[in-house]
Amino acid sequence: MESPRDIILFGPRMAPFTEKVRRALVLKGLPFELREPTKRDDYSKWSPETGLLPVMTIDGKLTSDSTSILFELDRLYPEPPLLSRDPMVAEQQRRLEDWADESFLWYFMKWLNFRGEAAMTTAAVERMRAAREEARRNHARPFHWLRRLRAWLSAGGTWERPETSLLRGLSDRLTDLANFLGARAFFYADQVSIADLAVYSMLLTMRRDAIPGSQQLLANQPTLIELMHRVERETGG
Image 1 (cartoon, rainbow, N blue to C red):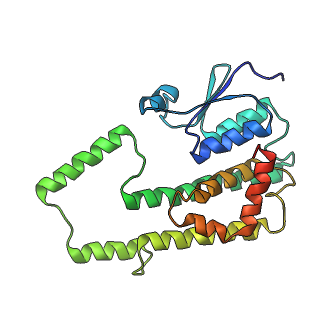
Image 2: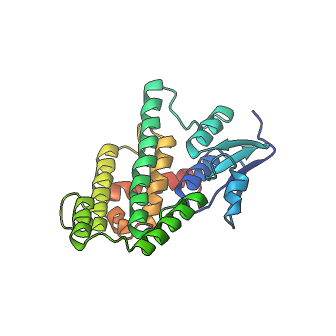
Image 3: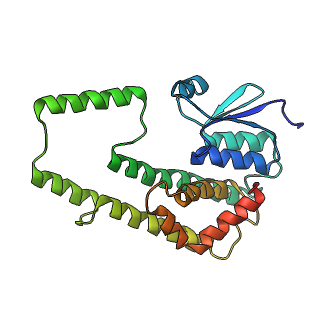
């Protein structure tokens, strides 16, 4: 199929899911425009169904969700492929892509929750504000010992800080990934796939220290750093 007249990727450049799609477009040699949101209304305007970015349009046809976007790109522009031609390998790549998205997002959202900054819809924010105001009016604060117990449970049954527990878990996941990759250049194949793009994008958020302390965790994993360099060489640096 010839190149489309117009590909537009809507999403914040620094977001991992936008980065995953952007690098897939570069890998496939497709010209595109990246439009980043500058105000909150952009999310609902560009993504009316969910209010979430990224979304992509190809000649005006909208596709939502980064994974669905990659599948659509592979359907329309199959070279180079983002999934192996071997169905069993392709399924493994899809599973790792899903794991990378969900696992690292879980840690990031957990950290945001510690900070009280979890990304939410406007309606959810208003509900949260109303609940906080009601709590202030009612002086609804848990007893000191109950707060300590909740912190202990959040830390996995230890007295370490929740943030420390989170970083320890994140470190374990990085070790799992490094061991799984081993001496291979990429996951499951000798070329970049949907799995590598997903893992790379999440590692990139750590290299930027989006969760404070995660940059050092990544620095301790040379195998994963080399993977990132290989992905960057294949997708435009």
